[in-house]
Image (tube, helix red, strand yellow):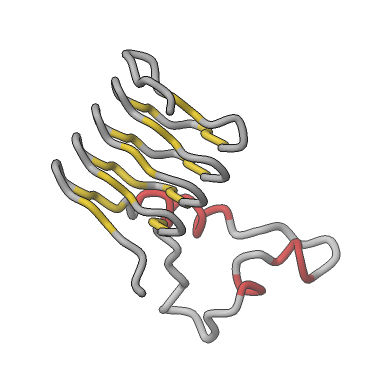
Length: 120
């Protein structure tokens, strides 16, 4: 058991990028946190995915929970990736950066003293 402190505890197998973690926070094994904030005393346990989210203080996120603003372009003729991930499908094409910028702005907010659990 790791004793928590002022500096966040990030498991060696977790990945945290472009995020702000508060005091006494913990990111569990195999978890991914990107472009998010995790308030003081909050934690996520193993294999959690969090992106584009603002999570308050004293929040507890269960294993295998995915919190992600993964919206699709509802106004387009198709929801398929090829409409915005063109570089993956078509030679000489670029991804739709405007779409990715818009999606990044559609953040998820989870308040203070909250929790989430995986459905069983």
